Amino acid sequence: MPLNIKEKKMIVAKLSKINQKALSVVIANACGVSVNNITQLRKNSRENNVFIGVVRNKLLKLIIKNSNFECLQNQLNGPILIGYSLKHPGAAARLFKNFSKTNTNFKIKIASFNGKLIDAKDIDKLAKLPTYKEALSLMLAIIKESAIGKFIKILVVIKNTKKINL
Image (cartoon, rainbow, N blue to C red; front, side, top):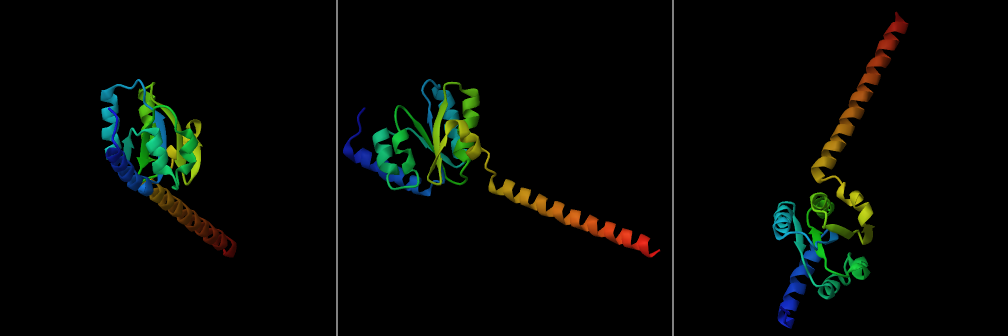
């Protein structure tokens, strides 16, 4: 059913706000994926702070114009499902990548992060970005390891100097 101009303006306004808040965008082709599986994907997206939706390409071009995701302008063709990561840049990429493992008809087309295009074959770069908690725990592990390493070196030096003095 065709949308009237008022409905189109409402869609553009709503998605423009989401587009401004988003950290990254992933575009996929969901043709051939069952409705039940898409419903599960939508549920998982809400849990992971990812907005997903199907938007006409012409409207999406208006939405991403003059934004960080303007580099996607030439990539919008055919039926697409768009995923906006709202809290973590790799959330949509991770969600779509995991979904594509169990749904062979679901194909990731392209992504955008920091104004740069990320090809579907390189989606792992975006999907494997650590979350805030993962990055914090990794940093603490490195600090802990370096502190313990320095402490052990100091003990070895003390032990060696005591042997020399005896």
